[in-house]
Image 1 (cartoon, rainbow, N blue to C red):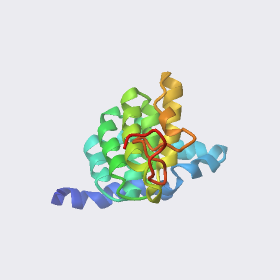
Image 2: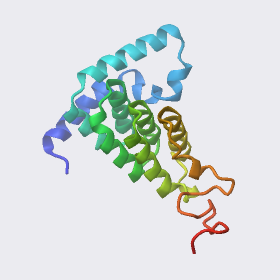
Image 3: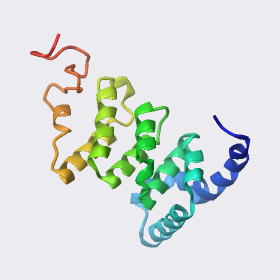
Image 4: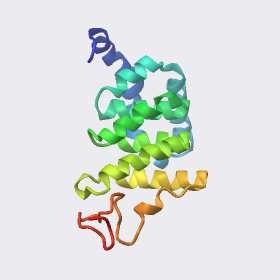
Length: 182
């Protein structure tokens, strides 16, 4: 439930953290396309914002739309705020809207623990059988592969079989795979 003081504070938070220089649009792929000085300026301002924003403010942004959530996830990542791991995992699993899921995956990759890998597995178990809900499946699987390599784990292997195993014994089309449980 949102409180009145959060509603009045939201426009200020958006102006300060989400929309400067269209920040929310530059996070992710566009950041990679920036050249030297522009990237340096952008990342410096992002780092400053990440060090200035508090947990309550991040929580307010995470309760809003995709622009605010995406920006908050990046600020969490840059600041290394692992206390938001669970919340980001919940948001990824809820998959309530577009664009922010990849930012959650960036944060989980940066945190880099087995707890982060477990959140990605939970997401893939739920959504990989649903090709109609493909939005963040590639990002989640790629992040899990990265964490597997870092952690010496093999959690992604069951999602990478020739049959396209979804995690529950079903193929991507929903049919049982040969030898799978009935």
